[in-house]
Amino acid sequence: MNPVDLRSDTITRPTAKMRKAMFEARVGDDVYGEDPTVNALEEMAAHRVGTEAALFVPSGTMSNQIAVMVHTRPGQEVITEATAHIFLYEAGALGRLGSVQVHILEGERGLFSSKALQGAIRGDNIHFPPTGLVTLENTHNRAGGRVFRKEEFREHLEICSEHNIPVHLDGARIFNAAVALNCSPASLVEGFDSVSFCLSKGLGAPVGSLLCGSKVFIKEARRCRKILGGAMRQAGILAAAGIVALEDMTERLQEDHERAKELAEILQESENFSLGFPVDSNIIVAAYRGNLSTEALVSSLAKDGLLVNPFGPGEIRLVTHMDLEDGDMKRAGEILVKY
Image (tube, rainbow, N blue to C red; front, top):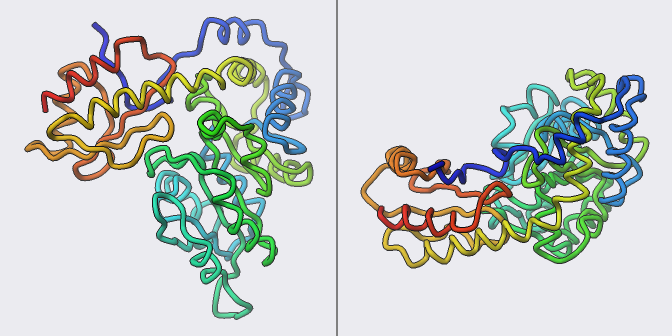
């Protein structure tokens, strides 16, 4: 019996329809702007999030870092939350690639207050790096897949607008947020200067992210993609799977959310596990109170047929996705409660 793999929603395999679309994709040289399938994907992505244009890139990290490169100049400062993906999980790229300083604000479950933001923006003083960009995240990975309503960002966006500071949204799982709130992704990104989202997290595509914004922004983003080595040639083979992902995979995310809630209910009844956060989408963070170390727990669970990721001392993360089957949550729960 195959293990129940809850390490991430990035471990999914492309569907048969995706593979067929990839095989049959019309292609051209995307560096010359001549790949019709890439162009179609970019147009579709921009339409879905309500921006003028979009750019297909290999990864979410590249998408976020291109946004930083476009919005800022070397020596400026980027304000972000202490547990943001762009700070914790992108290999120090803000400093190494963007040549920017990071101003970390402690938040409550992934979001700092508008008051903290107002106080963090640098004044006109030659001793300080100018504030060049603010980044936010929705859904928020480290906050257990927290979903933010657009109203929760309103004051942040208004403050940045008053100070003429651009705001980038790391929307890697923005479609999860839209499904959870029963709204359009475009409504959630309104007011942001740029947004990135992943095709390979939850939507099932094998690779790729989209960076979306104005035509002027995307023109410069295309140049930065080239600088980072992300310019691809006959990339329509990859983009074809992304088109299927946007057409077929967004609405089914509700199934992942329901499975996550099913497993969360089982965990709440267990002796040694508790939820680190309420379950908003497809991510569960579980705190463990048993006798094993986190590393030993993860290893033991794997031997019993359940794959999870450690998420910190005494914590594991479990992520639901489209490759799961009916009964997998019950099976996962039965394994977990033994510990």
